[in-house]
Length: 272
Ligand SMILES: Nc1ncnc2c1ncn2[C@@H]1O[C@H](COP(=O)(O)OP(=O)(O)OP(=O)(O)O)[C@@H](O)[C@H]1O
Ligand SMILES: [Mg+2]
Image (cartoon, rainbow, N blue to C red; front, top):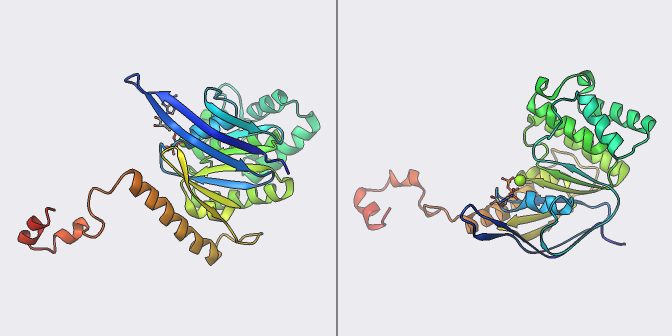
């Protein structure tokens, strides 16, 4: 089967404030299968949003090859990016009309996804009249309503309370199981990644460092101990990458709290 996303030798540089070029994506290779749910986990600033912008076709300035097939791309940005002069419903209608979704189908999808995200009562509210978490949920509705073949999601649930986030993660999995979209989901949350993904890539400093296939059968239960076990391994890989990129200032063997327990002489000898 043709992959939904095929990226080869992707390099992306940005000019820093000093005018010098900085490589942000460094020779990335990525293949995402049709209908695959891929999570990308990585520390802040490692290039995740930059990669999604390239995959979405918003950033066309790069070296290497990027092929994205499998239909329309839906993009849920890290921030909601709603049009402030339009109500919630008008924001959705704007996206539906731009993507030429037939009116009856659009109306059905709006009703379904607004109910799913608990926003049915807020159709006539403007973005400044809803909370940040509600705005992010509305942006999710907008991304789903246009029936994308590929859904790019940039830390979509990080601003939500945990109860709502859990509910929406489960709803997202149901939608994915029904509609079989290809999803690339960026998160800092290893547990979320293990619950959602078929495969997890740990990214750091503009490159993929570690790949984990998630063997947990579907449908998944958020409280499954297997999710917890796997997330521990992934967190370790994630932590190791963080340490590699930003070595700890203090030796992990001798934590600052232990210094208090050492006599001054020993501490001085150990240079801590
Ligand atoms: N338009 C730009 N011009 C210059 N540098 C940029 C630009 N966009 C991003 N960068 C730099 O690229 C690097 C990666 O940014 P990016 O937004 O991709 O990180 P991220 O992994 O998504 O981080 P976070 O988890 O905090 O969202 C950062 O060092 C950032 O300063
Ligand atoms: Mg980002």
